[in-house]
Amino acid sequence: MTLKIGNSRGILLLLALSLAGAGGRATADDVAAKAVEKVDQPERKRLPGMYSIARVGLLPITASTGRALMHTEQYLAFGGAVSELEGADVQSQTEAIVKELDKEMKYFRSGLGQSMRVNVCIKRSGDRAAVQETITRHLEGAVPALCFVVGDLPVKEALVGIDAVGSTDYTTESYSGKARPVVSSRKGIWGARMAFLPAGRSIFVSGQSVKGDDVADSAAKTLEQLGETLKFLDRSWTNVVRVKTFLRNPHQNAKVVSEMIASRFQPKEFVPPQVFVEWTGPHDLEIELVVDGGAAMPELPRVEFLTPPRMKASPVFSRVVRVNHGRLIYTAGVTGGNGDDPLNQAKVVLGEIETSMAVFRADLRHLVKATYHLSDAAAGKGLDEVRKMLFDPKSPPAASKASVKGFGIPGATLMVDMIGVGP
Image 1 (cartoon, rainbow, N blue to C red):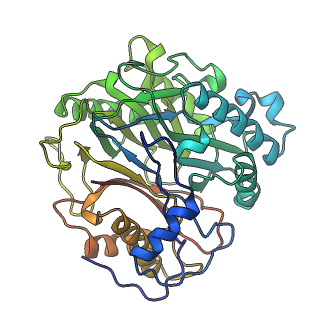
Image 2: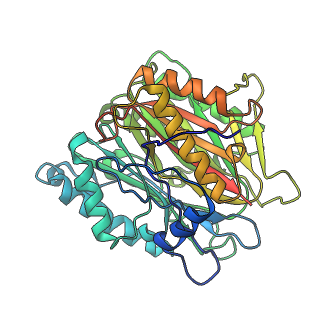
Image 3: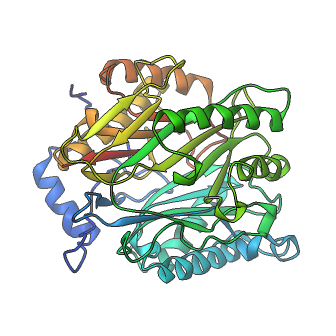
């Protein structure tokens, strides 16, 4: 189904291709120009604080030609040391994170310049432009697909936190298991700083939330349910590559939730990277997973949309999506028109994503993971209406729906980032 949108005012999602195994990589401008020739895109206005071109990384994950992914934890400046954070402004903190993150990714033949996506959490809405400028300057214009949300971080004094998904030419043969499986004592959170996802099948588990008596009880019950989901997939906690938690008051609760997550792993040194995003939702937390699904299976359908036992299927999101083969497509965080009503914002956002998928010979049926960030309740209602219009109820993407404080863009109440799969 094609959603027709007039002169929409969303971010212009022009595309760039990560050339796996081809000895180089196209620039954003080169591929974007070709993308415009292929797709009739209406003229769009630039939103404050956003670039008109945001790269969408394209990554083959077939067993024979695919590249692996490196998922990082959420990096804070100076290892989360309060004494150093207190006297540092947002530019200094961002600069410290970018240098450390890029250096450590390069150790595993990756880097911020090879990132499919970079997720940025800023404490203050007005800091978006400064953080984005610092990232851009460090990478000399080679900016990955960026997603910004506003919220508190696991350390109260931290003004910015950054995590990334980067491509790497490591293979299962050259490196087995987690990358750098060492405990991070920074901010009191267990986990490897990076984890290696071999080329092959990828599994995206939608955010799950089970209400408990307190945060620790909610985490324990949610993790128990996620464990059952892993059993259904014939996977275990050792196959988990990244854990992302949407959490109330992360500077108060991240440590206890991290310990609950770490308790699922023996030894604890193999806890995968953890990412925390503040949310203002109705429950204490919601947890989603990225899972290594094993070797690619080209004989199976490209994508499977799955519902574990004792869970109810939804027409607007899948509980689990398994990618058996194909190329992963990452979008930047896409917002709707500045000040538009919630329904139109949702139409703009999903229309932009639909257009982007078409460039890579895919469509909405090939969306495999969505994160819907909402800064008010009305945005959620508009989104739900548009999802019912667009998605095939038998094959909607896995999703997390997170209430957040904002995105650093005045008037925007919805931001969506997507992962799709192409041939």
